[in-house]
Image 1 (tube, rainbow, N blue to C red):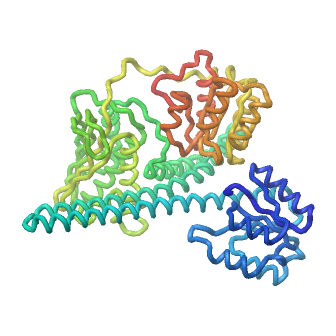
Image 2: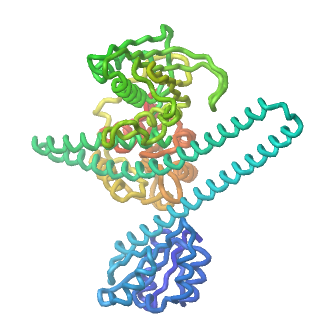
Image 3: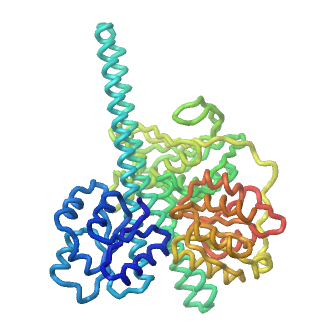
Amino acid sequence: MERRVLIHAPVPADAEALARVTRGLGLNAVACASMAGLMTHLQEGAAAALLTGPSLALLPDASLDAWLSTQPAWSDFPFVVLMSQQGHTPEAMARLRELGNVVVVDHPACDETLARAVHAAVRQRHRQYTMRQQIDQLEAARAEVQRLNAGLETRIAERTRELAGANDRLTAEIGERERAQAALLHAQKMEAVGRLTGGIAHDFNNLLHVVQMNLDLLGRLSKEAKVQEISGRARGAVAKGARLTGQLLSFSRKQSLLPRLSDVNALVEGMRELIAVSVGSGVRVELALDPSPCWAVLDASQLEMALINLAVNAREAMAAGGVLTVRTEHVEREAAGGLPAGDFVAVRVQDTGTGIPAGVLGQVFDPFFTTKPLGSGSGLGLSQVYGFARQSGGEATIDSEEGHGTRVNLLFPAVAAPAADAAPPPPEAEVQALASGRSVLVVEDDAEVRRVIADSLALLGCRVTQAEDGRQGLEVLGAQPRPDLMVVDYAMPGMTGAEFIVHARNRVGAVPVVLATGYADMAQVGRVLGTQSILIKPFEISALAACVVQALAPTAGPRPGTLH
């Protein structure tokens, strides 16, 4: 029901055109011979409705208006209307306003214009279905809280009647209930905002990726100094946008981190000068590193960004100067807070500043929470640190007392030191030698992203075939010879990149894969790809070339500890 599109057009040619475009998008086109049939199908459920100008005059006023007015809060049903210029009468425009969520396409229209309008309407409806699911989940959680509250209050009443003198136990249970409610509300808030920021960051990442790779193509095609200078400035702006989306995705716990076996002591020592510059000359920086090796699997760049964020916050808390101490140590702890028992590497950042008031201490990891004046901060710094630590399998906590400084604690699961150094990256000469003449299948739902990746691969000498989603990719695999390599997006409608890879390998065998993504469930990706190449959007042509070399190398050896 949720993938079908209803069509009503008195003119048979219009009805056939709308049905052809709808089926071309992989949707179920349902032609309605009458308005009564249209209303029946609307009440059953659909993704969108396609109408023509003559259809507007046939719409039933009472039944349609009643259906529109009784839509649930999450629903704003989309209509796509194919209308000629002569059809824009006052009566027709009034009817369009009554429909509400309407996209008007000039008639006659080309198939591509119709397809874009239909695709946009269906995607909008699918977002509404996602919102419906989230509302249902929130309602279920609220009902569960009410049930737990009712049960807790019943137990309290029973024990009060039985043990009138047990005031201490009653107080303890009431406090536990309040903590459980606060934790649940906090988790719901973090999850809701995380979904929102993750979705926005995913779409923005695709836009940045198109800009990034087109700038890279421009720089490779034109060697003029002025062009190189302009494209370089633009690439710098893209890099800033990529860092912002990285912050959003890290908070939403959807960031595609690149965890590697890292020497935490070496990372912190390497940050000494940068931290000193960040806090200024009025603050003395002290490093207290554990004498034993501190190895953890984490994204080194994200840890560096977290330390800079914490250093900048400490500087603002020590306006008159002070001491910033960064300490590393091994911590043995029992299972608690969702973390298993074991050995952890702790990174503690402590200042001698003004401290944090007790009233706001519980909010510092919330997204967009800041005590700075309007326009002086985004409130994403500490929430990014929190998201990075949790996504790396650890946790972030904060200890502070007003007037006595603040300490932020980052915990990461400790691992054994590596047996040998990682292998060096491949030489540049391998790119043309391995890529030239190779056949590559690109599976990506965003047309602009797909086009720029295909152009970049063609520049490397590859023969490129494109598919707009997993279903079309499988059709291409069934109709053409097996490709030498597949470049696959992760987040696609209908079938994720990981699911497509599984189906493709079942059909044509173990084809090398490069996964290009900005928003992925890395656990699922790891189960499918193992240690194969992963490209994080936005990326440059050089990064794509390196991954192509890695995937196509005859030795078939992804280098230990490296992901692109």
